[in-house]
Image 1 (tube, rainbow, N blue to C red):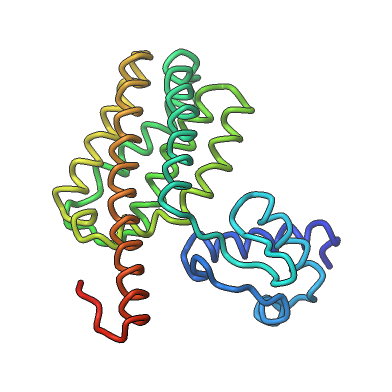
Image 2 (cartoon, rainbow, N blue to C red; image 1 turned 30 degrees about the vertical axis):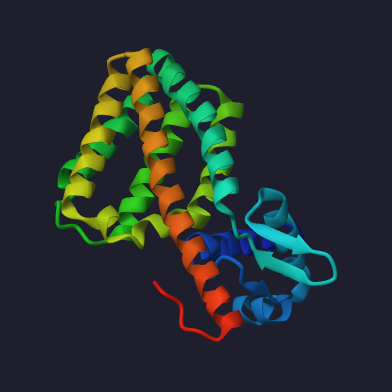
Length: 240
């Protein structure tokens, strides 16, 4: 039998993964009774895990209304990407200066995975997983444990809405996948060659581009939602 703390950690990890994989969707109300039954545990560890997820920003606790999967506005996403850029540009610069042999081995494995990925590859969950792995490894290679942990926690929050990017056909085109893979390869090569400023600049531009794409998609979704709400109020069909 698991200790209470280990059980809470297990429930936390399972609920976090359901959110990151979009099995629990943004804005969805979370019922502790239903989650406890689904996970085969009592309600107590579920409540504790939901509290931890709220502290991480993956879940929102609403007074007298319970817990909901976090839902980010375009403005909040922009702020998150600004913070992400500050952290990751610093990590890339430090990684180019401090990466140890074991980090280089990990980067070489990632390069091999990128080489094996066909332009027609359609396992988008795997593509996103590899993307996240690259950014987390850069945090590790910075050899700054606080910076690495901050990036790890932040990427969990980024993952909450990263699926929106893959809802756009342009984001899943072979050309887009090829461009992304080449950019990741160039970034890893710069880190391996100790090009601190080159790696920092490239990663900063990468995050800016991702932020712009995400902002466009979220703003379009927000405009569509407002049009539907306005049409419902007027009794006329929405023009989309």
